[in-house]
Image 1 (cartoon, rainbow over the protein chains, first blue to last red):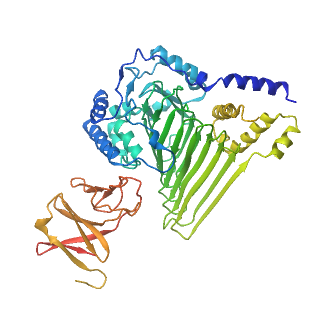
Image 2 (cartoon, helix red, strand yellow; image 1 turned 90 degrees about the horizontal axis):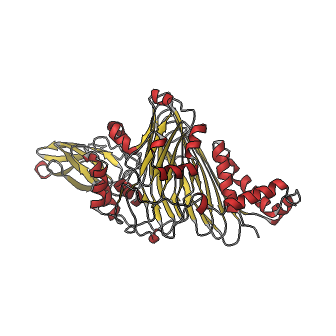
Image 3 (cartoon, rainbow over the protein chains, first blue to last red; image 1 turned 60 degrees about the vertical axis):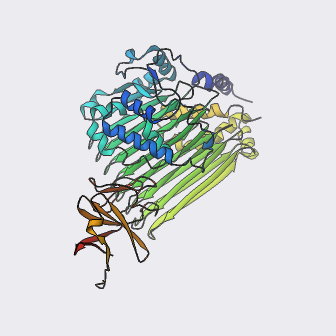
Amino acid sequence: MATPEAVAEKKELAGINADYKEKFGFHDPESSYAYKAPKGLSREVVESISEYKDEPQWMRDFRLKALEHFYSRPTPTWGGNLGQIDFDDIHYFVRASEKNSRDWSEVPDDIKNTFDRLGIPEAERKFLSGVGAQYESEVVYHQVNEKLEAQGVIFTDMDTALREHEDLVREYWATIIPPNDNKLAALNSAVWSGGSFVYVPAGVKVEMPLQAYFRINTENMGQFERTLIIAEEGSDVHYIEGCTAPVYSTDSLHSAVVEIVAKPSSRVRYTTVQNWSQNVFNLVTKRAVAHEKATMEWVDCNLGSKLTMKYPSIYLLGPEAHGEILSIAFAGEGQHQDAGGKIIHAAPRTSSSIFSKSISKDGGRATYRGLLEVADGATESRSKVVCDALLLDEDSRSDTYPTIRIGENDADVGHEATVSKIGDEQIFYLQSHGLDEEEASKMIVNGFIEPVTKELPMEYAVELNRLIELQMEGSIG
Amino acid sequence: MTDGTTTRISVCPLSELRPGAMRLVEHDGIKIGVFNCDGTLYAIEDRCSHDDGPLAEGEFIAEACTVECPRHGSLFDLSTGRPKTLPAYAPVRTFATAVVDDTIVLEV
């Protein structure tokens, strides 16, 4: 029999479960919007975005060249079904507010209310060093701790960074992910807007995380933020992003590019809690380089979206660099999470690990797709790849596509993969300790993902567990 | 002409490879792109170090002395063969060039 606490929790969860639509899936009126581009992609749309932003000529040229790359490349046929995307049925640029504020009270009311409902200002007060909030195509609020600013830390939106730190942006821009890297990176390069720019000077440790929150509001929207993080020698930074969108019957597209440069002996951690509504295609390119003795970590949690294709990668370019990818994917009804990670050992004595955990239920499909490469000359390198999949019912699906290329004899590489189902014996054992079937099932899932949640700041671990419990509601019986 | 370790091959008269132009040659199964960067000649193997695809016919910027891989966009410095952008991280093979009697010559 369930305990009173468990009954209360269950009621609470049932309340929340009424549900994504209520908590995250609402949308605001668009009557006060400053600009909304007509649907469709063209040279004129790209030029108008650049013009609206009053960009330098080199950026306009970059966009137009990227557009040509986008047109010339075929849509990938591997991974998820991208043939469902109608690129002509998307608004590529929507400006909700004329202003990017540093004062919360200046943010337009509708947008402010949205972020209030999502808990952003509260999170800033509690435990963050800086916050950015992107609404549609642009960042509407940005703030960074004054002490960090005094130490030379830059945390701003990418549009502002291009205006105020053009030389710094240009030095690193698209060096990690060139526009012709893949079709979706080309699209982002052509129509990018918003995103974060982070610069941490040598030796500066940013103690508390920086956070960006991305919100799509309008229907048939394309959000194409671009984030660039530069961690100078010996610096340390943790960046967290979250994202939600309204529930619509038609599809939206989110296609970001994230580039990270971790200089010698620096440490960068990039955490994502992706919770898009289930009408969003989430097609993101994320890549980092780690120089000598640097550490780069991706913590990538994918809960929402219709289809996610995302494989954060790390190039270990300097000796003794270290890379870690922790990936968690939850695929429910109608969802395909095609996620994973890539690590390339390109220098001696580099080390890495990829831990991937996926959960599929109600016919959902979770795919692990990864690459581990050890280049010739990357002697004494070590890596471990572990992929665990948990299937909650007969209708769900899990696939694993690990690619391992070893070009160096003096390397130590391990790969493990498991697929398991929640067994009747496990449930029975936990029921014999007083849990009901649903609680037992949740406990097994929480134990399964615990290696990932323990790496998150507490507030995010709690949120992730809560979201997964929400997804689990009603999955038994 | 062979001096024991390298072979010299003729590419074309210098007048046929103007500044900003590129010419592909093949020797012993290796394709090589020869580039005229505003008067200075460079040669690299026509094979991207990222995925072994053709490289030399990508966008050539003579002023910057770079070529961009047409497949995934890595930008290579023609003077060193090193990539300036990912996804390639290893250099491509380079070859010494010379002009002998108004003819471009490669050492392979």
